[in-house]
Image (cartoon, rainbow, N blue to C red):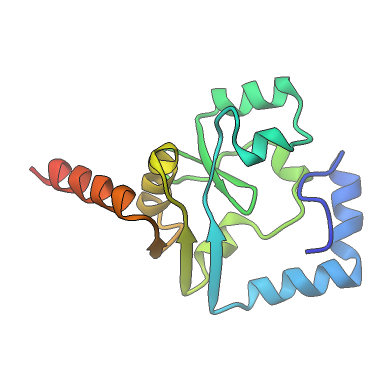
Length: 149
């Protein structure tokens, strides 16, 4: 999408999503059969927070709401549930429920810092295919085996 991910307010967001170029791209996303998404973490030093337009107050408030990660700037908690927060009204993108409705959602993430976010995305059904590194895969499998016991 040729637009910022998080904008100043809902008015700007509403104006952008009605722009033909942005609206056409969002419509394509809604009709997709396959989505390739990154899984972001909500931790100091993460790409999201390093280059973000979020204020420190918003970051603290989102943390208080239990944000574990994001997919396409759609924030979710440790169970993979959408975090209901006013920031959602400023995001230019596809809603998390629409992403979940895509038949094949391929999540790409790896490394120990992303383990919690990956687990939450899997638990919440936000992704149904995972591309990751061998160490992260082994840790996910170990934790899955332990939770079954």
